[in-house]
Length: 116
Image 1 (cartoon, rainbow, N blue to C red):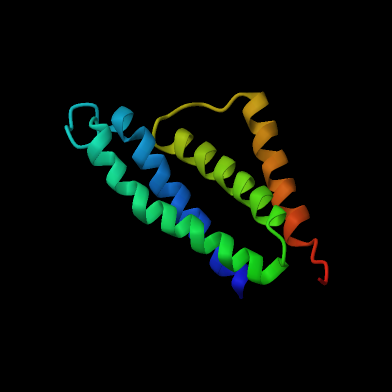
Image 2: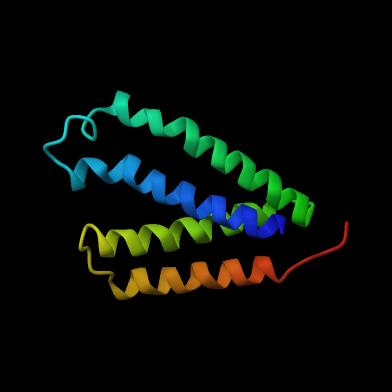
């Protein structure tokens, strides 16, 4: 159950981080999204979600490396999907291969449970 909490928090945090960093390109004329100080307000909830995602992952695996790899994979997948869906950036073959590798990393880590 801890693993699912961790992955859900990672997905939400990465979606929020996408808007935090790329909102300036989505809403170019909105002062909120074009101001580093106001978008930094997203930093606190995003940081808390990453904190708890790491905590729950450690509870599940007993190691921090698993979360590092899963976090990288989830972040890459979320960024790829959102860049395509929202910013209309067509992924290249190189990007698609990286997304497939990110999926492979997640699957390897999720199925690699070692007793402490």
